[in-house]
Image (cartoon, rainbow, N blue to C red; front, side, top):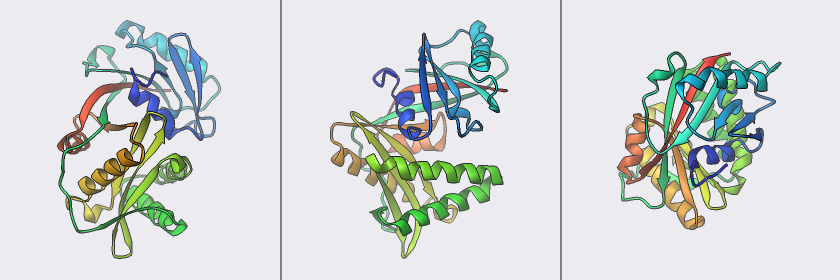
Length: 256
């Protein structure tokens, strides 16, 4: 996939490199995750260009044919371009948009002395991060979502060998973490996870700032790509660090 034209989609591949398969077709790519048919965005069509509303049903049929016999829960069609658009004309599917944000430098943001920031290096560090992930999902999700979050975290642990993860510690407790996958000229940011009782205390901005600065220093020829739901608080926080939106990824989701 062309990272220059579609950096969000191209760097999505860094986050699923250990489990997904990509099959190039004329005008689109099939992304498969054979071991996780329940993962929406691991079993999808990635289009080279924006589809017309009239062609959407045809793309749904392409997805159905590509995943015949696979127990996928959703049919996901996505694409990326440089602007937001009105998805109402597609009439029916759940529409999701996320912004692609570039970090090549940042302006000084809010920092806090509440926590000590350090890389995750030991097995006990990673175990503490997994506890944090599971606790956050238990508080906000179903047992299936907890299991899925655990599986994704184990993927982060494997795949981040080419990057780095930083944690925020208060005493001996890990209360937040964030990281970056690195590959060639591009890196992909892992959205920080912060314990519920420590939110709105400057930890997100501090951790994101350290992760971005350290990554740009360690991988000086890379552009860090960050994904965030369009219009979300995360987008606002990243813009507060002086980062710029470089594109928009659009996803149309239909029940299988």
